[in-house]
Amino acid sequence: MNNSKTSTISPQKAGMGGIFAVACVLFSSHAGGGFATGNQATQYYAQYGWTAPIAAVIAMGLLAWTIRECMVMYNSRGLTSYKELFRTLYHPFDRLEWIFEIYFNIMVICAVSAVIAGAASLFDRLGIFPYAAAVVLVGAVLLCLTIFGAQLVSRASTVMSIVILACCAVIFTMGIAARTDVIHEIFSNFQAPEGFHMGNAILNAFVYAGFQAVVIPTMIKCGVPLKNSRNASKAMTISFVMNAIALAMSCIMLLGWYQEFTAAGETTLPSLYICNQIGIPALYWFYNVALLFCFISTGVTTVYGFVSRFEHLKALSGIRKPVARRAVVSCFCMIISMGVSMVGLDKIIKYGYGYCGYLGIVIIIVPFLTVGVYKNRKYIKEHPETETADTANTIASTTAEPAI
Image 1 (cartoon, rainbow, N blue to C red):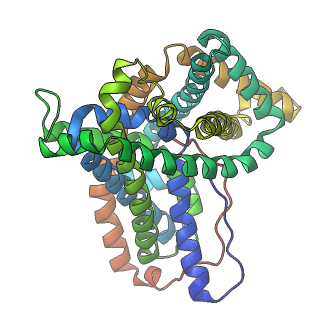
Image 2: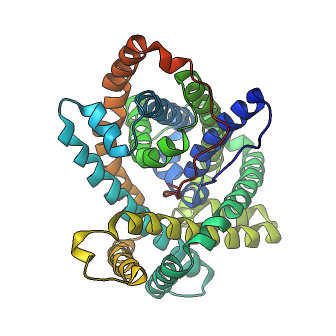
């Protein structure tokens, strides 16, 4: 996730720069290591045939609209935390905000587990370490970096994200071009698994948006400079276009190669398999390295965010040294995540992300797109002055949350 600042230029340029920067934060949060592996797109879209890109676009629309409502509610009322945001949404049932806290922490554990499982699968696939040994190694590296090198890795994560996105653009384009005949046949004949219908595709879109909504705490902080609903709408429209195109291209490519990579047993890292089949060794190894660093950077920033929230608990007040407190919380998070990662990336994405996605539908997506929309429109109507504010010239700096 990028921390962006616009320079001191004309108000119009500064405003558009701020809007675009916020849009890019959501894009980089989505298009991380999990997206780059192709695992999520395969499980939630590609395996269901021609509906894949349609469902992907619906999911990105739901996510962008939800976060738009979050930012409008947060900024119009001058809220200061995601807890206040959810209290406002659930009012008069304010205490229900703890449900989001549970959802959020489970998603963080799942995200770290997916990072460890993804990196371990990469080592295992390359024949460097067996899976179990790789889990221990990756967990130990993440633990050390979280305690001693989180800021360095956080700064490097932006570069890794750019490299991953550049590689994905090349792979998606070449992967689609190599299977245009198969892709044409799928869409011409509306090929889908037996018994599958559009309702399943729409449900998957809601589930996907449900677990991606874990980025809300980051987005509302980064979206503070978007002072009115018009600017929030512009930022989320731009982000929707970026995310929808990237995810739809991924789905289309995976559809073209689906029979081949499933037959080869490469469902865990399908994009990497396709990259290898394209036949450009330099691209394949470059992608391996970039994917590994993207996993590491996502894992470190995610664990660091987890540590920042829990290192000041009263239960740890007896530990005076901050490094020691961070080490204790990091170890707790890492032990649980390493244990979960032993089930493998496929099951983490299917069950961990999936069940959190269902919970996200109930506590985030549906409430914000119904009650949230109503409360925002009513508040703006009663307080029209909230719509006269313009976009600030700077973007809030924030610690990155998991790139899901």
